[in-house]
Amino acid sequence: MPLFPAAARVVLTGAAGRHGRLVLSLLREEYPQLDVLATDLVPYPQCPVPFVQADLTDSAAAAEVLSGAQGVLHLGAVPGPSGTPPPGVDASWSTKTGISLEKLTSAQVLTNNVASAWNVLEGSARAGVKRVVFSSTLFTMGFTHDPRTYAPPHFPINEATTPLPGESYGLSKLLGEEMASCVARASAATSKPLTVASLRFTNLVYPENEDKLPWAAPTAEKPANVLMWHYTKAHDVARAHILALQTPRLGPNPHHEAFLLSAPTTRFKEATEELLRMFYPNVPLRSGWPLHGNAGVLDCSKARLHLGWRPSTADALK
Image 1 (cartoon, rainbow, N blue to C red):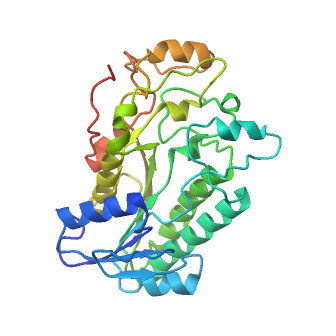
Image 2: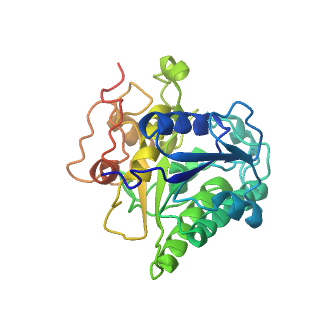
């Protein structure tokens, strides 16, 4: 049975963004009985549900939006790393990452995301919210502008892997997860304890970009961070948000659980085993991990087990 089977109030932040709109559409399709309130920093004139324009870095504004809510989908944030790399990193790497980088400074990315996440999480606990779904990122694990500076402690990467963010966006989301744990633990003794699911998803691929796969494989001249080898279809991530909102028990931790989300294959058609030998020869691979073809090295079994999440991309790229 879903966590919110009746006409519960659910607040969706970041609703005007492309992914926010996709999550909103899916939420209305699957749970039309929910009373959804959308919010964003920017206007959304055609929003199909009640909408409030609000700056969530303002705690009073966040509290007003969250009043009466029972569930929250927190997508609102600066959505990626700063185009200005950390000190000591050659700025030319910013043009080679393969993703769009933000024009904001690293400090602006950090302070915006941390402040808004704290206000949403603390405001949710004060409002008696049951569940917050926090849009985190795989970049908590170790995205860096210069791909040569990151190597995970092991493969496959899973939720227990030590996060090693190398810039302020990944750091902001990791701090958001820590704040989620803190606020949820503090609410445990109240009459309305809060639970939080953090979704660490990879690079979103929308339908019009699916035909651009596979990408050209990384080379010694053009390396790519192993986290950038992976992707997830946007609809699959939206679906995970709905599952995380409605799953009654997220896992063994009664307060906060994090989940990795990724397609089971890389963006490349080349054999992953060969790429690992080239770029990560000293990183150990767990015995028994099925590294066949272009299989990925992200272990998403926790999301499958506890959320019932299944990526729609099941086969290797041809």
